[in-house]
Length: 220
Image (cartoon, rainbow, N blue to C red; front, side, top):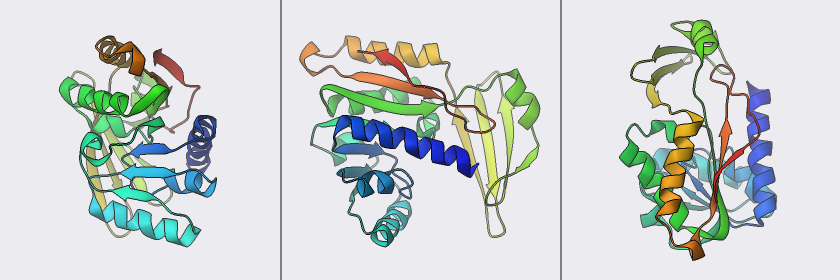
């Protein structure tokens, strides 16, 4: 698992270097991606709705000796007024959006914050039959703790429970196919002014192991 997280960090670090910064991260969480990018010398704006997460992120940044521009809002549009060459949303955070309206609101906010030619890069997954067979209602060891999943194929939701020695957390994730993400992004781009249009890149991941595949450009 740690190896795959490392691959994810490297993937986003490479995207950040290519953009030249600054980088806006939606759902910055505890800073697993933001801190390495900042340590590479790029400015990072991190937005998250959880004050507890932002506090952990700030401590992690301080320990690493880097500065992050952290902002606590649910909406990126409300928290950020700057335009950036790269917006990222790592670790399948978009799967917490359960409706088309919610997804489109994130795509719209990200798009509106990009400079001309900028990119919105995120990763998601869509479990296949093999994923479901190997994980359905099974507790799998992970570092730290363990996790269990229950997939509802008709609703296209995955309920993930993660626990360690101290606590247990359950979250519901909703997936779309890559083609549906492409359609959502293209719909957003088609309503945008050509002068401000950027592009969106999708990184698909394996539902069992978080394994990443090369990003696919969804719109331009």
